[in-house]
Image (cartoon, rainbow, N blue to C red; front, top):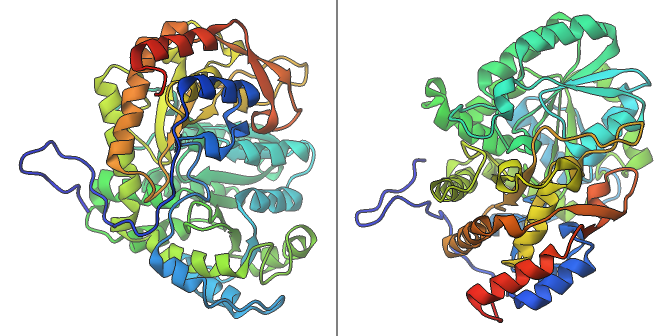
Length: 482
């Protein structure tokens, strides 16, 4: 649905729900936030949630559930094997995607593990429009490598292109020729490219890319974790889809793919995941991996209550009144900050508002993790927890050198049905203040660096005393208790 228009106000996003349950938030004083950041090793993942005012780290598993989802959680069938809750979920997924073979898993990265175990051997190639951290880690762990073929325009921060997640079809053909079709074990398209601003993929790009994969006998895989946002953007940005239903668009996308997997911490608005496999033989070649890594085939490591909530959530992810709220709040945040001159990824995508740290703190070299430093600074100056999406989220090259990321972003996620507009305005205000004092922010260096997925558990320190000076400047502007 379009944004509701106001008579005496600029158009603002309108929540199509009311709040029934609340959680108290705490805004610590700036001095305490500075100390908490030091205690966390300047890694926002290591902060305690009780010390955070606005948790914008992710939208994964932290979306607000509806009353219908909570009601569904009261009717689970807790059987270890053969749970009716599982079969209700399978029926719903087949109704939506047209695929009846379902392998349950506890979340998206568990699905990626199973796919990597089934397909990837040393030297194999997996083609993507763009990688996600855990997806790539599972593939490289098995000795494979990833080729990212997003169009060049997808890596341009500021533009008005509606579908910056599209794969480059010429690069796709060339990569298949260079690698050999037999060595490309699957092509994975992410419906909403997480690491480059949640940018969507067009319906035509899905169709064209899958047609090329089909021609070469390559398995096509859809990561549908962010599908609900992508569906919203196709309906609102593609004139040919304006009069089509979300369900109709969703089914046409699904019909292109051999395998669909997702994290229900995003698609489904609960906590779980699943792999849908079109071909029976391929399905049976993977099903033994579920009880090995996840749990029995009718619960897959998930709580049955979560399965019931997911089943309701799948329907909600196909309702415009539900899926419009996130993108509209994100667009509002991006547009307001863009008007203030803050470098943002435009147009606004899914997941959250993305700050271009390369431009925000252009004086910090990539080797000193500018996006990580900016995320730490934002917590110090507002109690806001964002997520670094840049070089810190990469893994080092084999020779120990840094693999510099294509983009240095700080993601301010907007979980669905969680924040109010006044809270969003607070975030906008604090980001603007920090931008006006951006020269005070300095770099970071590791004190503890894990070999894999270092952004989760690594610890860092500032290269100078910039956090103390930044906190002092903030207190001068806002007082001790802000």
